Amino acid sequence: MAQSNKISKSKTTPKHSITQMSSSDEAKQIMLDEGFRSTVYLDPKKKLTIGYGFNLSDECNRSIVVRYIGNKYDFDELRAGRQKITKKYAEMLLRVGIQNSRRELKRKFGALWNKFNHETKNILINMAYNMGMTRFNDFTDMETALTEGNYKNVVKEMRKSLWYGQTGNRAKRLIERMKKANNVK
Image (cartoon, rainbow, N blue to C red):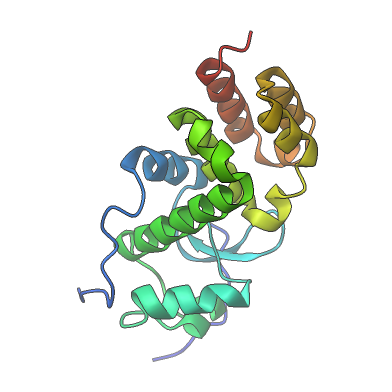
């Protein structure tokens, strides 16, 4: 069988169970926002990505692939575009990514995290999953506004970001959700 190094643009039991790792509304929304691709592709930041926006460029994600779907897929083969991923296994990676984003956001915001309403948490998780915590941490003015409970400024900071220009309708939807969840006119 010939192997392909092509990067696309567009049933075994897993080693570890991933039940209840994320609420289904978070996962469903991110699945809609990210879309699904069974083969590796380059995201707008030129990162190798697969499934529902799972980043294969970051070497730290190797351990996630090995731990959760390593009995079915090889990290290097996925990254090289020689393996396709099914929706089932892509959703496993998504749920681990959501869990990791939630954990990092809880760590970042500390006790304040528990004061955010459910929808605000989902929006922040969506953003962190989409851009990664390193880029999310660059939203210092938005973080200040969140800390102050100033959701008008949270929305303003979301709108004036580079992320807003890069994600189009996703950013617009998340801003509308943030406004509605926090009574911003």
